[in-house]
Length: 392
Ligand SMILES: Cc1ncc(COP(=O)(O)O)c(C=O)c1O
Image (cartoon, rainbow, N blue to C red; front, side, top):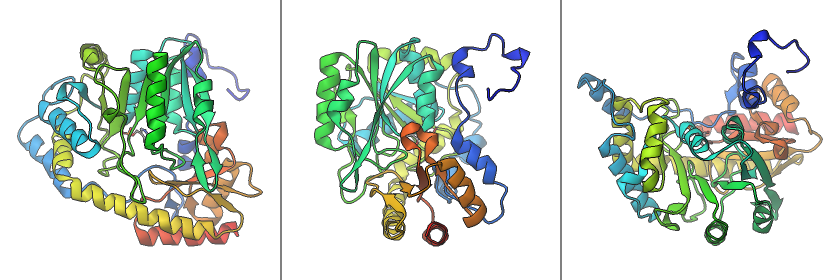
């Protein structure tokens, strides 16, 4: 509470809520959002509005009067379309009964934490990580055990033995976000096999955030834990329409869960939001059934953006950057700049570029900046010019 008097209304508020910090990503966004001419690369989204065919499906649904309460687990055509999509793209074997539509990937994360975590339960998590994931755990009274990614030979690297060694008697779950926000690290298939073998042996839950699952570069295979585990194993996969279909403002996501948990999850939805608006789900059906060319063009643009960032930022002597292998972020350190929030503010003021300070992603991220490169090539080139000038 930074030394200020505690308001009387705080009495009785759960300590886990009082202890949850403000998002530092939002802090820098608020710091710079009103500054004219800033190129905003601080949040995880592109600069294009959602495609027309997706918006039209929502408009049509509203015109058809689909404005009533609907299925708690999601409308059947969307659940089926998502199962088909996962089975085609990721060689999974998912039935529609395992798919639950949620009001964003964030809500899927939160419901997962509500479902599984008692106060004191530990979640072992690869860090740095998107701060909202950590907050979903701590808001429920869960305890984080961070395991750091490190740069080795110009790539982000996870030591699996270190990951496993951090799982103790209070560990309930292992959380993996690959491709990773903020680093662009991608876990390879052999490591995924070892993780599956480990969680099976130890009876742990595996929570896999596959929100950037389509965004892998250099011809690497798109992988999912869904193709490696059976329906009734302890696996929850979190996903979203936000990134792959340019639908960040819609707030639609999904989770894949063991079929036996369907009713329990439905209860959580019922007593929380009571489902996702039908017109948004109709738009999501259009996205998933007709959106393949769109997804491919977004992936191609992001890969070209990644190449440009590596070429341009990699040439700045003070910058240390591991080549992102997936997602749409570069996470780089600047020599002589240990305070990432101070540097992020300076880059807003002096370069007109908005980045997210690495400290927002946990202690492991201090000293780094996260830059989203999912934007159009001309704007990205301009941002890189400005950054190169400011950091040289
Ligand atoms: C790793 C990761 N998981 C989940 C989400 C949630 O996405 P949304 O709530 O927009 O569906 C995000 C968004 O940035 C993310 O980066």
